[in-house]
Image 1 (spheres, rainbow, N blue to C red):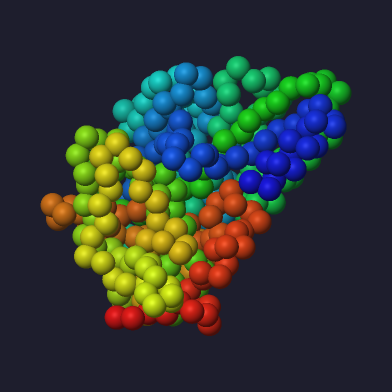
Image 2 (image 1 turned 60 degrees about the horizontal axis):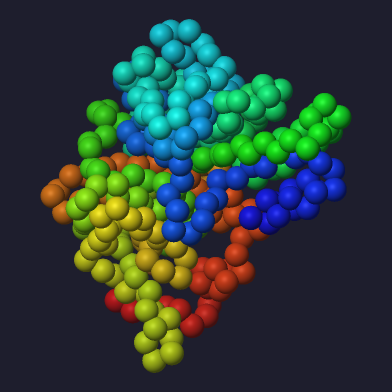
Length: 329
Ligand SMILES: [Cu+2]
């Protein structure tokens, strides 16, 4: 958010700017979101479904992953394409359109139990093509990329495009490597992150339930930790305490946001701390009331994506902080 404010201040004085944002108002659901996100271990390609709920045609203009050291390639009908048009109020299903992402330069083929980050950048389709983000093969650290792109834009195109404002929307996805397509669960993952910590870490997911029935989550686990728990935070005798809960209810038609200082997933007894290094992603298995299990990928980050400056209020609530908050099992 600080970057956006900075960009607006710069924009007022310079008259031209590019804004990268992944954030949206607290209660709002973003106009673009994703489902069926997975990397097929057999074909070694990633597919997803993109829903554009805005009245604006959008272009998927850039895509990259720290795991793909030689870049991410987007193929449609076997042909490499640079951009993908996602029309206003439409859904683009990669499988139906014979589209797929290939991760070039992976250290080794992905297997079930792996997950990789994928950064997607969208522009308005009617923007000047010059302003569309460059292909970004060097993807990490994510926050610096936004800044570089912004300054490139201001240096390179300032004279040509005075008084224009271009809004780029960026989304950092986690892509789980799976043997079979993920099941339909009705719930959408809007964003997620897990802290680069061991032996105990916390994961935060923002869910959206577009259906007209509540969806109940009854369990969580991850191959990177021995135990997964769902926790809530409550005040007891003026002390913040985390307590395990049996379920999280994702209300019909609403967002349900896990966050530091609130509801969260706790991964206990991390088996391989190297897997929880910033810039990677880990799988998280969500178990729903009807027994359906959905594996998602969760990027490893020390702060939510798009929140580059962190949040001082949240810092005090960090797990492992030697303060007032403790576990009471
Ligand atoms: Cu906890």
